[in-house]
Amino acid sequence: MARQGDTLLPTTDTLRCWTTNGLPSYRFRLLGGCAGLQHAVFTRLGGVSSAPFASLNVSYDTQDAAGKVRENLRRVRAAMGSASLVYARQIHGGTLLALHERAPVDPEIPYPLEGVDGFVSSVPRLTMMVKVADCQGVLLFDPKRRVAAAVHAGWRGSVQNIVGKAVRLMAAEFQCRPADVIAGISPSLGPCCAEFRNWRHELPERFLPYQVRPTYFDFWAISRVQLTEAGVPGENIEIAGLCTRCHPDVFYSYRGEGRTGRFAVTIGVEE
Ligand SMILES: [Zn+2]
Image 1 (cartoon, helix red, strand yellow):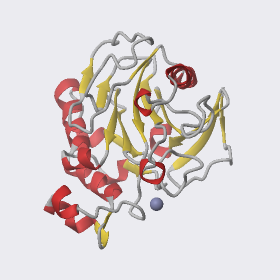
Image 2 (cartoon, protein in one colour):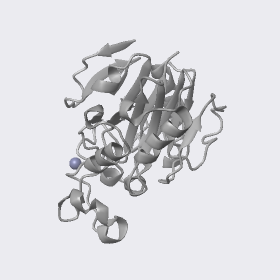
Image 3 (cartoon, protein in one colour):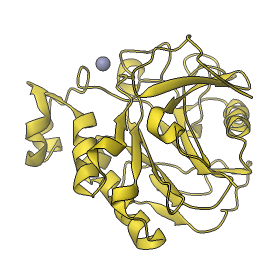
Image 4 (cartoon, helix red, strand yellow):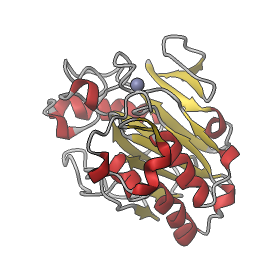
């Protein structure tokens, strides 16, 4: 059972707080208003992992005990009420997978899918998950075609415009109109903390307008622009506006903590 209005979590105008089976999470205001859609931004709270991975770590690539990660994944899937949960070993690449049928998932194999940084699907009761700790989890949904997407977008993903790729994949594989797409950008490294001392080598010149002060960049604005350039209307895009590094009690932050877990950002179409 989901309960609305938990005041435990810091929040913003674009987010609503929920508790499902004792697991706190956020929902975006716009995506939360879409019938037939389940989505959530989980936090680091409500799981079984010990420090420094405490507690709802969903990544096997963190030196956390595999059994604890498995239990955390089970809790996420149960909270989503889904038949299956699909995720992959992410590599900060630009590869997205279009799922037209339920992918076989064996919980004994940590990563049946390698090198995938996002999913697009219309399969009911299939929850797609990306794992983040400063990177953006970007959720997309076309309520007309009933197609959803979950994208892992770190700075390398932003350089490859992976969010624009996801919108184009929705159009190419599922006949979505970008003008119908609704987007949510998860809590992630904010302009307050996104420092790139080697930005001249790491970031393309086209990111320069998003430099907010020397060596700091606004990747939330970069994703918003990449989505609008792909055809998503600006009023359909919500940014969570919470910086992971500034809220280490609630989120994992790779920059802030180094050895830490990953939290789950999930979406899936209902039956
Ligand atoms: Zn910050």
